Image 1 (tube, rainbow, N blue to C red):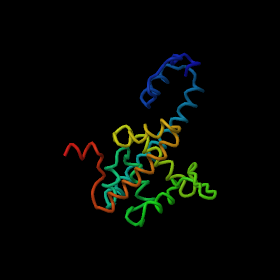
Image 2: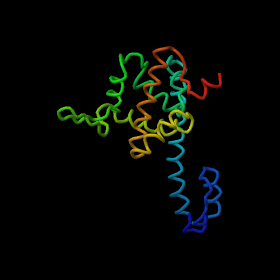
Image 3: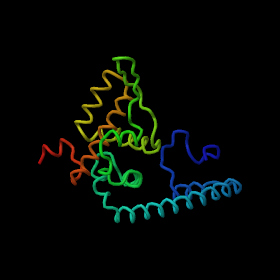
Image 4: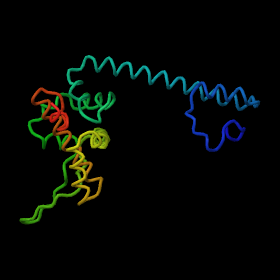
Length: 195
């Protein structure tokens, strides 16, 4: 569109179907219009598929008894709640946190020699997709939960931010498990103090 003079280099408008239609009206090249309209059909088809999937997720969420607990966690939206619920279910099924950390792949590696025990990076065993979702949630949660933010700041001061966010994710999933074990919604320390 820039080559045809329809947009400027620094144009920051969000692309929409309406904007594309307006821009195509200004273009005289029939070949260009045909190519863009073909891509726009694919775009509309994908929009339709996404809307369909969002509807299915919404129906699934209404029927899921775990949904409310997952949605109460800071940083967890509708899609992440569905992923966590579908992958983990009710977290009270894990007898202890070590099982949960191992399942999610958030267990630190251990290098032992004689009396010395050193912990290293996470083992990366377990569900890789679930681990990446938990890390994404942890990044958002530190903005909303001051105790998680303090944990991140304390660890990232000594280590790098990657290790710190993994530690936050581990702490967060442990807290979610506690919410399931004592059937309550997840509460931040800020929320508890306000009550």
